[in-house]
Amino acid sequence: MTTAEIIKGISLFEGLAPSEIEGVLCVCERVHFEPGVCLMRQGQPADSAFILESGAVDVMTRLPGGGEAGVATLGPGCVIGEMALLDSGLRSATVVAREPVTGYFLERDGFHMLLTQRNGAAYTIQGRITRTLCRRLRELNARIVTSDAPESVAPTADETGVSPGAPQRGRSSFDYRAFLPVLPLFRSFSAAEVATFAGLAEVLEVGRGQLLFRQGQASAACHVVVRGAVEVTGAQDGLRHRVGVLGPGRLCGVNALIEGRPHSLSAVARERATLLEIGKAAFDRLFTGTDRVAAKFQGAISHELLQTLARTNNHLTRLISQSRIRGGRQDRKQAEELQRALATEDCRTA
Image (cartoon, one colour):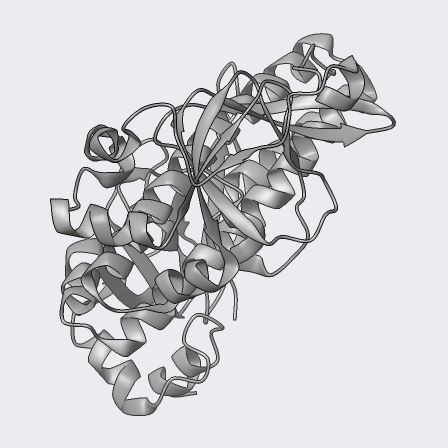
């Protein structure tokens, strides 16, 4: 197969015109590696993705307490480390050439240059990577809920029997618009862009215990936490497991909107909170748009999801260590499964 045929068969590039694929390859570096050469090392800064044209590579991960374990062997048509195109991070695994390897390195700076130029193919690829990231988070969170012990979590209003009252829409107890520019989400936005974004959303104040959405519920909106905190949990066998607590500047509920799926987790106000609610129509406009506000919001989503993935990875690493310490046969099996899931989080096959 030719390079174009191999790349066209990768889901990341599926449906792109040959000229669009060539436009992406123009900012790539074609490379060749001999057997035994390390392409990526676990823990090092990640600043590029690798498109494997020919040959094969071994994917390995460090084990708690020392040593490495092989978790996958990948061949032509695979993309490795694609999450690095969205934002800075660390490699989740070591990749070594198993035999002579030829491929392309696509660096994040080059990819972001295409986005700055409003390159349609780059926006398509970014959206597909983001959807993959949402899927990975959903899968890894499901493993956490299945493997972790339940924690004491904030009760919902239904559980306490104390009504927090109806959410207050369209009004806030403080000047929330003046507060928005200091939130991490909006640090790259100009004052005019913050105002444009706020105009697409509705301010919402909720009381402690107010349920924002329930696991399995259809998604109709996402939220930006302006003040207060929201707790995210997953249910398993009638017990709730804490997945995270979201404070000011964090996004809540975007994964379900991006994937077009029901919520895989529940979210409840941990304390009285002020939120910006972004309805599905406005979110779709921002997520698929190419104007400056949309582009910056897409970058903020990428940063948020990768931060969430890093926290999820830390949680999984703790679970792996606990399983290995317990040392039972089932514990070892669980540790191996979690380790494999952790190490192959950003490898895409054709």
